Length: 386
Image (cartoon, rainbow, N blue to C red; front, top):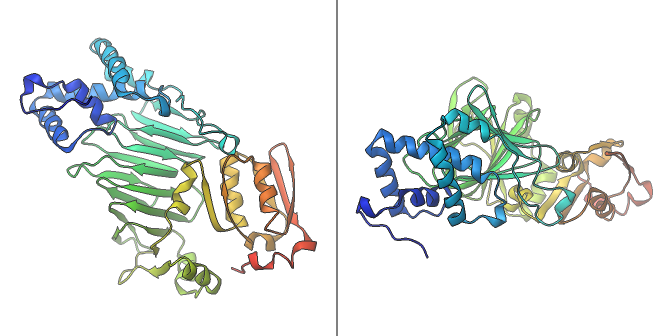
C-alpha cells in the first residue's frame, strides 16, 4: 500500500519519497514536499545527490521487468550507509557496470544485455547501446530513456533534478519526468530539444545529414542555427515530426521539389509536409503522423511503412550488426511495409522477397542483395522513383 504524506516533516520518510521520485511514481504533492526539503539545507541537497548516484549504480543491475521499489529501497538504503565513508567520485566509478536487462522475447534475435554505463575521468557518464542491441534505463531524475542500436547518451556526473541535460549520439526515445522548473535538454550535433514533461523520439546518427524529432505527447522546443548561423526556435505539437536538414543543397532540393511520389503516400496517411513558415530555419515538418512509425523500434513489434530498401538496409545493419550491399541501384527505390516481431535477419529478408523483386545471399554477417529479374514486373507497384 502506498504511503500518504502530510506536511509534518517529522513523519515523512524522505528516503522512500526519493525512491518514488526516481522510479517515476511520485505524485505532484509529494514532489513539492521533496523539493522543499531539498532546498532547506546543503545537507539535504547533498544527501539527495548521493542517493541518486547510488541509485544509478543499483538500478543498472535490476532487470526492467523485475523492478520492485520496496526491495530497491532496501538495497539503496544499505548502500547509502557505505556512502558516508566514500566520495561521490568513487560511487561513480563503481557505477560503471554492465546493465543486465532481460530480452523482450526473441525479438529480432538480439538481446538487451550488451549495453552499459561508463564513467570516464572527465566526469561524464555514458550510457550506450552497441550495434546489434538496444538499451533502456532510468536517469536519476526519473526520466526513462530507450536507445536504439549504435547509440549513446552522455551526461555530467552531477546530473540531478536541477541539471537535466544529455548529449545524444544516435537515436533515443525519452519519457521525461515532469518538472516545470527544470527543463530537460537533449543536445545533438546541430539541434537542442527542450522538454518539460513529455515523450519524444530523436534520431541524430553521425554521418547522416538529417536530425529528426518526433513528438508523441506534450510539447517540445527545437533550437538551432540556420545556414547563415542565425538562431531559430521552433515549437512542436503532438503527432508532429520535424526534420532538421544539415546540408544546404539537400534542403534546397527538398524545399523546392514537388515530390510527386512522396505526395501520394502522404495523402493516404493524412500527412502534410510543409516548410517552416516565415522562417529560414532549414526544417521540414510533418503533421498528424503515425508516431509508431518513428518509435516502434523500441517495442516488441517494429512497424515499417513504405520504407525504401536503401534506408531499410541501414536500419537493419544497425539492428543486427551486419553489412548489407545492394548491387543494383534501382532496387534502392523499392519500398517495403510490414511488421517485424521475433524474426531473424534471414527471416526478414525472406519476407521482403515476398513483396520485392530481390534475391540475396548471407555469409558471415555480410548480406548481398541483387535483382530478381523475373519478378520485376510483378512487383513494379512497390517501386517509387525518387
